[in-house]
Image: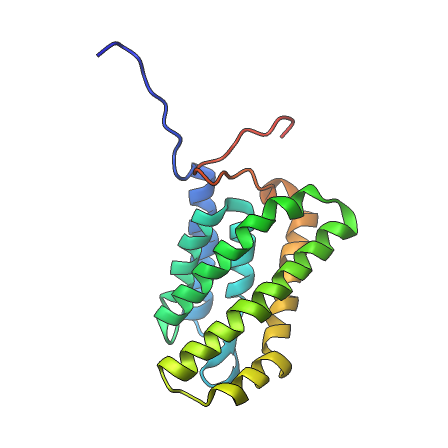
Length: 191
């Protein structure tokens, strides 16, 4: 031993753990209590995607993955939600810091556009595809059309975008994405 102390960057800071536990716990409780609006079996509309987006924005991709796990546990088909929410968090994370760097209407426009793309190009095709092809719950194309044009994806897009937009405007210190892809958080000059 040379007496040197090596400093390792933690994968998650106490702030990130707090975000993951509090928001993930809220998402878990929301679904476990059945606070959902049934759209068409087995699809439901609830607040979990908004909780996931807020937590991922503020805490980063690792926090998003923890929240995804907590979102999925009480679900009707946990593996479908686990994969869907996890990939959603990983698709959203690369754009978060770009969204934060913009100001005013540009920030919100990029946020809404990003959420729209993720919802329409990933979430609903994946969800319906898995439920239709893998589990055989319903025919693929009719359900895909209902999801895209029947309001499911649009409702999620509006809910997620509105929740994150409001959080950015009214809780900017909480939402500031100080997280790092290497884990932990980076120091931000001037708070």
